Structures are given as C-alpha cells and as structure tokens.
Amino acid sequence: MTLSDFYKGKRVLVTGHTGFKGTWLCAMLLSMGAEVTGYALAPNTEPSLFALTNMAEKMHSVIGDIRNYDALKQCFEEARPEIVLHLAAQPIVKEGYRDPVGTYSSNVMGTVHVMECVRNCPSVISVLNVTTDKVYSETGKAEGYIESDTLDGFDPYANSKSCSELVTACYRRSFFDRLPVSTARAGNVIGGGDFAPNRIIPDCVRAAAAKQPIVLRNPYSIRPYQHVLEPLTVYLTIAMRQCENPKLAGSYNVGPDLDGCVTTGELAKLFCDAWGEDMQCRVQPDGGPHEAAFLKLDCGLLKKTFGWKPTITVSEAVGMTVEWTKAWLSGASLTACMTNQIAKAINRAN
Image 1 (tube, rainbow, N blue to C red):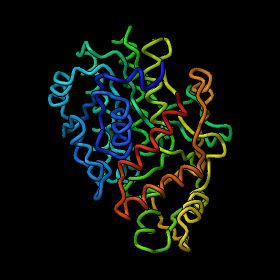
Image 2: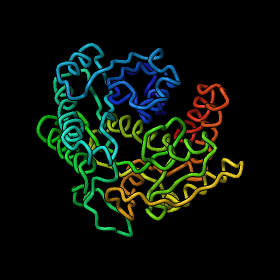
Image 3: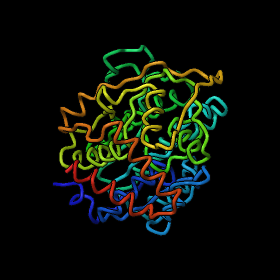
Image 4: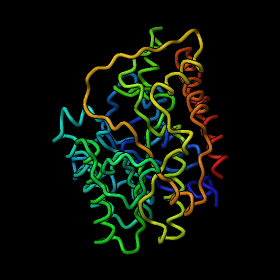
C-alpha cells in the first residue's frame, strides 16, 4: 500500500503543527487527502511558515499548550484521531539553557500528556513520537549511534528528549499491548520556511535576504543534515507500516548517509553556491553553550526494517531550500513550490 492510499481519509492528529516541521507534515497529509487536526502553540517566529501558507484555513487548527492536559484531552475527544504524530516540543538548545524548567515541562510532561490522551482514546491505531539525534550520551562514535546506545542527552533540551523517549517506552510496556507506538530520532533538518533562531540555514536565509555575509559561530561541527521531507516521509511510513504489523513498533534513527554529514562551514558554502549573487560567509565565534563536535546516526535498523534509503542529497536539500526562499522573497506561490517538492518526495517514497 502506498502512503497516499493509506492516509486518504485518515483522521490524523499532529501536535506541534504550527512549527516548521509540523507545517510541512500537515501539507503532506493534506496533499494525500487526510483529515488533519493540529494542536500547538501559536507560531513562535515572525514570519512563520504556518502563517505564510495559510495552513490554519486548510485544516482544523487548535492553538493550545501541550502542558495543558485538559485542553489536549478535549482536542483528542473532538478529533477522534486514528493516527497520532507527536512533534510538539521546545526544540532549541540555547532556549533549554535559558529556561530548563519550561523545556522539561514541554518535552517531558508534554509527552506524558500525549500518551495519556492516547491511552484514553479508543480510536487511535498508531502513534509516533518524534525526538532527536541528540538523545544519546555523547561518545563521539565515528560509526554512528545505534538505537541501543545509552540515552543521556548532554544539555537540558537533549536530556529532556531522552526523557521523552523513556516516557514513551514506559507507556508502550505498561499500557499499549496491542497499540503500536514508536519513536523516531531525527537529525538536523533543513528546508524552505525555517525561521528559527540559532540555526545555520535560517541564519543563511536571513543573511541572504539582507544581502549580508553569513556569520558562522562554529564552522567545524559535523551534523547529519537532510531535507525536511526526508524524515517526514519516514514518520508517515513508520506510522503506516506498524499498523500493518504492530511488531515493527520501536525506536528508529532517521538520518542521511555519510555524505549528508557535513560541517556547518561546508553547508554554508553549499548555500552560497546555490544562492549565487556573490553570497559569502565569515567565521565569528560567539562563545555560546556546549555543542557536540561530531554527531552521526547509524540508520541500519530503519533501512533493514522498512527497506528505506535517503532519496535527497544534502546538495539537493540546500537547492530546494534556496528555491523556496527565492519564491518567498519574490512573492511567488509558496503553495505551488511546496506542492511540487512534496509530490516528488512522496513519489520517491512510494
């Protein structure tokens, strides 16, 4: 069964739908004919992809706090979802240092609230909790972290997502004998419409829009970069396939192959090359908080279980991001741009 066949007519609840990844995910689901409900705080960037695409008019959007259990429970009761995709989180490392209490509250108790709502919602047939590649204890493994490695994220954001993994595993063991529940540990994603602070590609976009050089804080840190449509396709695949075979439920790393693991300096150069117009970058360390120098995932389990492989190279991902950004800056149709990119990604996955 293809993704489009499976999701057509399905009632899907997406937490964190107003964010960058959430908006792209909702756009994908709507393109396949799903009935989409979202629950999240209002967008926290200006501009935001959610507002630019008028997504609130295309789906049932509920603005609420994941830490508010009663409001979330009401959303579940009204939506009667079949598929639950949990993306809501405080996702910024620096914000975790600034507000650790709020970060743990959102990322840990928010997950508890989602799982408790699922436990009391008989319509649900599949659940996926999206975490991060930063959940692992940092050892600098050259071969990449695997799903059985120790969960002990270094900073408050990463550690809170490690806790979210443990919460999900506990609920799976304690309450969900027949309901398939998985987690997906994704690496850094890039794509059009990401306006978050302190991220390399959004920083590149802001510099390009202002016709200024890109400023790099740490050009040597290595990260696994992938276009946002790559992991979103994986999320949808896991949620579908575990419905067909609940034994597939588990935890999966989601990331690019080795050629997608590049330094922030290399990524910035790819952006400059794709942008043209003599775009340049320079290094200016800011003495910010701890960042892992090397971070790579081993995605062998995902590949073996689902026959998956990356379909978008990091160079293509940067090109797609530049294409979206130039469409936005020129006033062209963002819907047309995204629809075209989504269709290509879904066709490759099917």
